Each structure stands twice: as C-alpha cells, then as structure tokens.
Length: 424
Image 1 (spheres, rainbow, N blue to C red):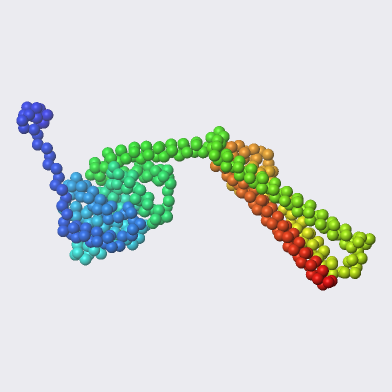
Image 2 (image 1 turned 135 degrees about the vertical axis):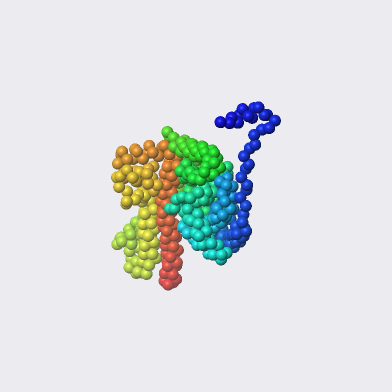
C-alpha cells in the first residue's frame, strides 16, 4: 500500500497535487430566461408587505443552489432543474400566501410548457418545488438541496436581521404580532428544530448554524434577564414612590379636601339663609294676629311675591341639602370575593369600596397593593377620580341652589314692584 506521507517527505520540492475544485455550475439559456421572467414579474406584481419573500430572497436561494450544485458536482441537466425550481419556488406568493408552493408549481409548469420544455423534466422541477411545502418531505437530493437553500438564512451571520423581515411580513400579511421575548423564543425553537438534509448543505451550513444557535440562545437569555430586571423593578417588598409623585398626590388630595370643605360650608350657608326666610314667611303669613294679617286680607295680591319667595327658597334649600348630603361612591356589583380585590375599578383606599370585602381579602389586596407600584398608583388615581366625581356633583347642585335663590329674589322684587304700581 502506498504511503503518501513518506513520499511527500522524500520529495519536498514536489508537493502532492491537490484535487481540483469542482467547476462552477453554469446557467443555461433557459435558466437565464427564467431569471428575467421572474425578476420582471416580481417587480410588477409583488405586494409591498412581502418584506421577506422578496426578489432578494429568491436571488439568494438561486445563488445558494448554484453553490450546492457545484459542491455536489451535479450534471448540467440536474443543475438546470434545480435552478429553475429555485427561481419559481416563491412565485406563488403573488397569488396566495398559505399553500403558495402549489401555485408556484402551476406557474412553473405554465412557463416551461411555453418554452417547449420536456414534460418529464417539467414534472421533476415541480416535484422539487413541492418539497418546500411543510407537508411534503424532501426525498431526492435535488429536493433536499432546494429546501436547504431556502432555509440558508438560518446559517447566515445576519440571520437575526433577516428574521426581522419575516416578523414584519407576518404582522402585515397574517396579523401575527410578537413581543421581543416571544419572537426570540419562536426563533430559538425553530433554529434548534431545523436540520439541513443534503450532503452539500450539511457541509456548507452546519458550522454557522451551530454558531447561530448559540447566538440565539444568548439573545434569549439577554431578553429574559432584561424582563426579569424590569419585573423586579416594578415588584419589590414594598413600593417606593418617587418624591415628585408623592408630592403630586399629596397636593391633589389636599386640594380636593379643601374644595369639598368649601362646598359644604357654602351649602350650609344657603341652607341656613333659606331656612330663616321660609320660617319668617310662614310665620308672618300664617299668624292671624300679626300686623300683616289684615294687610293680606285687604290685599290678597301680596301673596304673589311672598309665594314666589317661598317657593324659590324651598327649591334653593333642597338643592343645598342634596349638595351637602354624604355621597359614597360604590358599585352594586361588589361582592365579598377575592377577585374584586385586584379589579382596577375597586379602590382599596376608600371605605366605600373596601368595606364590601371580607377582612382577609382586604388584607391580601393591601399587601399586593404595597408590593406593586403600578397597583398603588392606580388605586390612588382611582381615589382622586371619584373624589372629583363627588365634587362635581356637589358644585353642580350648589350652582343650582344659588341660581334658584338669585332668580327667586329677582322675581320677588319685580312682582312686589308690580303690586305696588297696581295699588298706586
């Protein structure tokens, strides 16, 4: 048996000849015509939302198929079939998204028939395209080469950027939206579940695929660490609000309390004033021995201004009482159950809400509230909002009370003046 190592050592000036590299796969005239047809077709009809399955992707697949054909030393006929299938494999996207492979086969068959391509060879091209469908496993070497070239992006250094194009396409075409961690997990599962089938594909892609798997794993860990850090920031032993936020809520609470106190004082003043007026009018009008008694008997028309004043005072005092009446914001749907303690509409800081809960559920809700800044702020904002609702009702009723009182005084004065003119 010949020992090439010894021969090489004995003749250092004549190194062993290396095996010649396989010749680069040449494109036939038919493949060049297919290229021109597909490029023109994509420029005219490809939808803009197909950011991944574009003409650039098709050209990349064709390029990879040429490299794989060269590595596998395919015959000219086999190379032609492989490259034709590569040019047409995504042409079905012009018509349909899911199941585009079948439409790609139809387009290839129609074009090849117009070129007088042999029927048997056309069927071979269609079978290669069909293998790219998820339900049809690649069996022949040519089918395996096309599927490997179609997924060659997984073994490219810029595979993550290419994946973002697919993510954008899915959002528009399929309405599928993924958060960064979700997309990273999806890519992780896909890249780990994929394997190249052809011998040339394994040789060309497996090394970079292994590196990309590691890179994707690191990316996923990075996103998980970031999400965990964000969660820890929002969730701690107890919430620690910033001083500016504390000051804002303290000021809002103080202003609302002052406005509520002012509304109650104004309502109390109107109640007292109108109550005195009503008492005086009723007392003097109803007293038979009063000095007004004979006057009303002789001039019953004086009852008009007094009646107007009495009625408007009654309306004013009723509005003031409604304004000062205690108002507790609550919900009829509140029941003593653990679920409502975390409902965003339930304010655990307000007795009108938390008294509807059992003590245990209230305590659980408060502990949860103290652990989450967002929940704490939500409850404080809810409290301020409903305080504002109560104030809006109070001042609305006060406005009505003052308006009735003002109109009553005006009408009473006008009517009394008309009575005096009438008597004169």
